[in-house]
Length: 72
Image 1: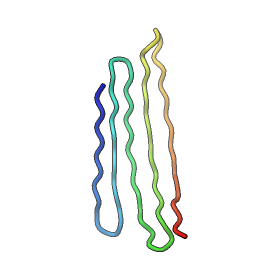
Image 2: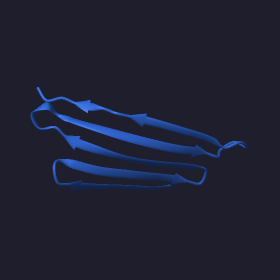
Image 3: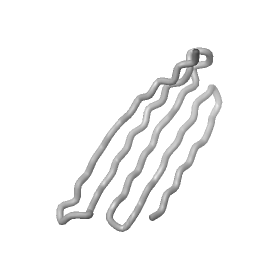
C-alpha cells in the first residue's frame, strides 16, 4: 500500500490539499481547498474519487464534503 498527502498554504488564509491511497486493487484520490474565515472559523471543500477492483467488476465511487469549523 502507498499513501501520499500534500498541503500547501497560500496568502489570504487559503490552503490547497490532496491525497492518494493506492493498493493492488484499490485506488483513492482526493483534492480540496480550505479557507480561513478569521474569527468565524473555516470552510473547506473536499472531492474524493475511489475505485475498487477486488471483485470482477470494478466499483467506482465519488464523494464530496464541505465541513465548516466554527470557533467559539
